[in-house]
Length: 153
Image (cartoon, rainbow, N blue to C red; front, side):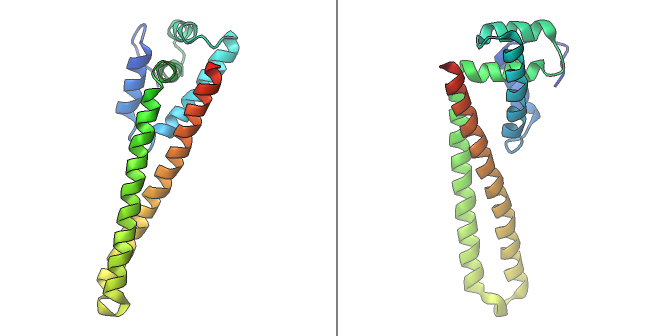
């Protein structure tokens, strides 16, 4: 992500992430941002968030917003926990909708009305894909939380 802003705060950078990417893309993009963050941290030889954010603002390379967004996550780890809670609610919703559609499809039966049966099958497929994606997002966010905890030690 690129911007013309000077001295972007980590919170502003994270807000740009949340407005740019939808809820299903956000963990994948943050995962990429963690890679940029670890590169900055390694090149500086420090884990100090303030030093990394100052350096990112000074350098203003293509990935500096990614680094600043991760700095925000280090400063406010509850952000990731809230995101994780949101995904857990979302996965429960999709699981419920899958079970309900399967139950309705079973009640209707194949012979009663083929169009309704196919509609329920499509609903199941749609929510199964979303369920799988949210499950993957949960794994990513949990990994980010673990990584932050390890790097804070």
